[in-house]
Image 1: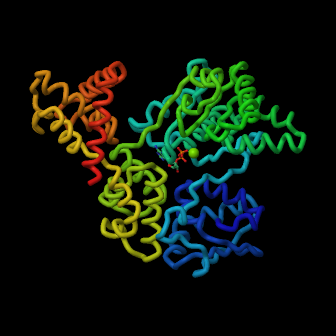
Image 2: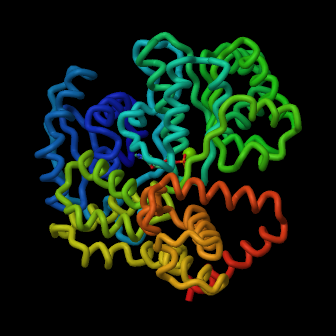
Image 3: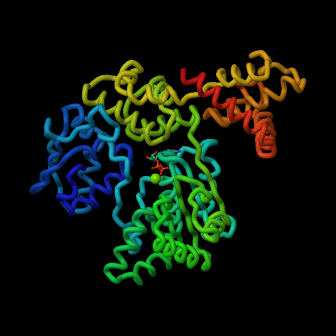
Length: 455
Ligand code: ADP
Ligand code: MG
């Protein structure tokens, strides 16, 4: 709810409602609305009647139950149409949904405030080739806390690909298995600001104690600690204390540990456990994610429309789900059924900006073919002569690098199975690493492909 801070007594009530109906449904239907609570009447201000009907049909009983459970109040629900209410507009997905997870209330059984958001779980994370390694490593870390082979676990990726989700999922899993475990989720920014506060307020010891007596420390976006010497030292000491006593450490970052440019000792420590990258999801995964989001908000939207969105939004999962929610918000507001035509109109700005990024297999084949003077059909033929096989391997390698197709999909594009693609990729990579002239040649080919594709 937009103005929940006006009613502190309702925070845990709505946290409970969010847990029951799920984060996606809550974000979609309830979070954008304002409320008024007086006597036993809860008034929800909404942009239109349709919105009110949706809440009444799907969530009214959950809302009433939660009020009864937490406050012992048998409330009356009133839906008021209010044009002034901040409503989801179609100008930006950010307007529809707050993208940051809410800071949740502390879990009830455990007095230790873990700061976990219970909506992010392993169960509602779609596993795919692009995140499988990170997903498995996260599960392993949550099951065998502090085990040498999973500690520390460092997950890195560009924004919006699921790092925060996985960190919370680890914490939630640990607490599910052991409700009294001491787990703390914190972002790099929070670490820095709480550390500075603790110095100013002379409560440094308790800050220190809080961080160093954990069973599992989940620190998100550690790149924010970079460049601040005292904080970095504090982080280093915390890390060492936990590590030395065999406690689990999970870190996320938007860059690799090497790119963080931290001192040698810390970097080598970070690399001593597991480092897992999450890559951009392929088309099949993007469709699977959209299906899951659709089901969780329980909105009628066809697979054809989902596939259309999935094809058009390739950047990251946050933008993908933002696009879906934006379309749903638009359709709810206007009382229309989602279609490809509407999606094209409502998401025009997002879809267009993605077009320039997509590189397709045919452009890769065309440019590699031109460079090595081989024909388009040679890429898919069974010919094994070196003059054809080598450019084919290069084209396969470039497809793994420049597109978000999965290995089996790439195999199909070249009329081969995925193990052939893996072999081609590794062979070409090896040559790039050992032969700088070849590396330069490949760079030139990549530039040519990008130029052709952007025309
Ligand atoms: P990051 O921390 O890498 O920027 P987040 O974890 O905040 O990304 O993910 C952005 C949004 O996308 C979240 O709502 C998250 O639940 C969702 N998300 C990301 N990856 C997946 C996935 N594989 N399956 C389901 N939801 C996902
Ligand atoms: Mg994040």
